[in-house]
Structure formats: C-alpha cells, structure tokens
Image (cartoon, rainbow, N blue to C red):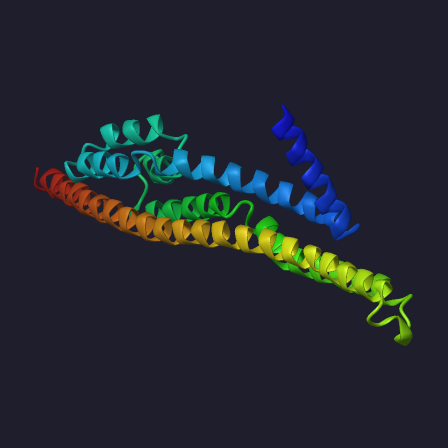
Amino acid sequence: LNSNCLIMDAFSQLIQKGGPVMWPLLGLSILSLATILERLWFWFKTLKKEEELIDRVLAASGNHDWDRAAQIAKQERSKPIGRFLWAPLNRTNPDPETFRLALEASAEDELATMRKGDKTLESIIALAPLLGLLGTVLGLIRSLSGIKLGDLGTSIGSNVTLGISESLISTAAGMIVAIGTLSFYRLFQGLIFIQVKLFRNAGNQLELFYREHWLKMKGRSMDDRDLDLMR
C-alpha cells in the first residue's frame, strides 16, 4: 500500500512539474494503450491456427469437395481469413469472374477491419511530440518572463534553471508516448503486410481450383449436350 502511495505521489509531482500539457499527454497515452491492447487481442485471435484453416479449405477445394470447403470456412467466420474464404464459397455455382470478384470484395472488407485503429495511432504519434514541445515552450516562457540580467548567478537564476529543466519534462513525456505508440504501429503494419500476402496466395489458389472445377463441369455439360444431339 505504501509503495502504491509513493508511486502515486511521484506521478502527481511529475504531472505538476510538466505543466498543464501533461494532462492531454496523459489522455493520449491512455487512448494509445487502449487502442494497442484492442489491436493485440484482435491479432491474437486472427493469427491463431490461421494457416491450418487455409490448408484445410484448400485441401478440400483441391479435391473438388466444395461443400466440405464451404463448411470449414463457415465454421471459422469469426476469423478474417474464414470470412474471406467463405464469401465466394457461399455462392451457388458462380462463374469464375463472379468468384474472383467475391474474393476481392471480401479481401477489401477484411483489410479495412485490420486497419482499424491506424488513424488513431497515427494521430497520437503526430500530436504527442508537438504537445510535449508546446509544454516546454510554455515552461520556458514562464521561467524566463520574470528574470532580469542582474539576477544571473543569484538564487533567482538558480530557480530559473530549475524551472527550465522541469519544463523539459513535457517534451520527454511526449517523445515517450510517441515512440511507444510508433513501435506498436509499425508492428501492426507489418502484420497487415503479412496478411495481404497470405490472402493473395490463398485467394489465388482457391480461384485456380475453382476455375479447374468450372472447366471440367462446363466440359461435361458440352459432352452431354452433344450426346443429346446425336440421339
């Protein structure tokens, strides 16, 4: 309990020394942390057994067991890759072009979901250093506004130096918030890049299997028509 009180006191003093700009910086840090935690949970659920799901759907599609492939994808619609694969498989005997368009439309929707929170993190990365710099400028103005040339080297000058050092706290806080947010932002961008490649490869293979299936079905239909004409 005592240690918690000491931490709270130190944090309160840090906020006071940093000036009024520390409060919006605190708000930005809380917003950043909440967004990062939400995105981490999203990616944890998304990446879990993702490649296994793709392999199962493609294995069923490669054997032209489209009902089985659709069933597997339907069961995993809580995942972006499951919804992506389910979108074309949910259609009844679509032509290859419609199949491809369904894949593309679904991919755009899922990638938009993956980019959720990006604008928030980008704004925090841009605003936090500027707020920190603003706090430093305001602190310098406050510290230097009452000093005279004759006060240099006196106790008043020492207090001004202390005030200047304290005004730099807001800059440091802004940089810490921005750097921490930027680190996770780049991590999420890397994960999105990996997902784009994964979606493209899975979609191309699924479309290839379906085109082969479509050509076989079309060839059988033409053979049956020729037999009817011969009869």
